Length: 214
Length: 214
Image 1 (cartoon, rainbow over the protein chains, first blue to last red):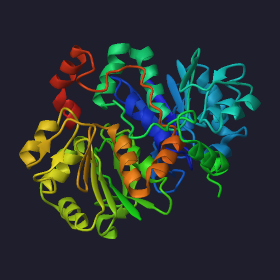
Image 2 (cartoon, one colour; image 1 turned 135 degrees about the horizontal axis):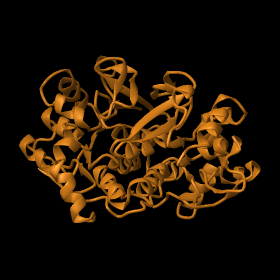
Image 3 (spheres, rainbow over the protein chains, first blue to last red; image 1 turned 60 degrees about the vertical axis):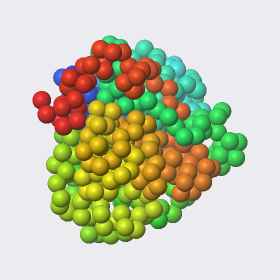
């Protein structure tokens, strides 16, 4: 089995590495980081380089594809090699997935039309313009299309997909292997739970949060 | 403020990227990935390259240091440049932290003697031989030494440290920014919660899980 994770400049690193850490623990599975050009891309802050090992043409038929989000998403909303690749691999994937604003890329490529999908809470409504129905849930399954909410939600998404791919015991083994027994020191992980001033602050800075623009 | 995250060959990627995604959102803070040599290291499975941007000598006085774990930890248990650097920077850090078996590296460098500390659940008892008192908790504070349990726990650790560094509102803003509202599809993230057969399976393969040895 082959799982392809798309890398691009100014992505959010955890969007890619969260699902990676789960999927890489499925036995007899190759996870490959794929991008337009081999070599390092830089993440959204510029302080982390992640290496693209395979170009798009090197990975024509992955079983599962993961599209992470991040400010660089805005550069991938027009038709081009990434959209063409996504549409081509989608013809044979078992699962086509995204994390955070990665769902906007899937949507822009035309893959979420008429489907229920989610995204980062600040970007959720943008799905409407791409023909999808926004759903405010952490992980949304619509047939083989699995979209996850903001950044950290990719871990939950990948565990859910791993359970479908290899059964509950496999997913539980991965969860215990990465000791994923979350105990956040605050309960502010969704706009419904966070203090109002925190929600307002981020809404006012949403352009910065989503696009990295100051 | 400067936060240094150590990279080395065969580390577990999420150990580093989890805390990174939190710490990188603290305003006016530089997060730097540091290692023995500039350029990419490969993670535990070999399928992800993460780029070291600064050598140890380039980062003599970080405010916070993060030591991730992973199978490559076993190559960093002897005295050498990494231990020397850890002891040197520890003299001026505000927080000296680790994730997963990164605590074994801190311990081997002599920094956890007489302290309460944690590690991946399969490695916890190894702390005793390094002079520390093993504590089966997700995040353990002992003065400025903050150790986290396995892999994914670094996110919780970094949020807790961020709260100490910049206050509760900052930590909550980061938590909402990365939408860290965990909803694992299974409840198997600790040995007390996982099915017995899953715990036994991983215990029997602990050498593989911790050291990557087949």
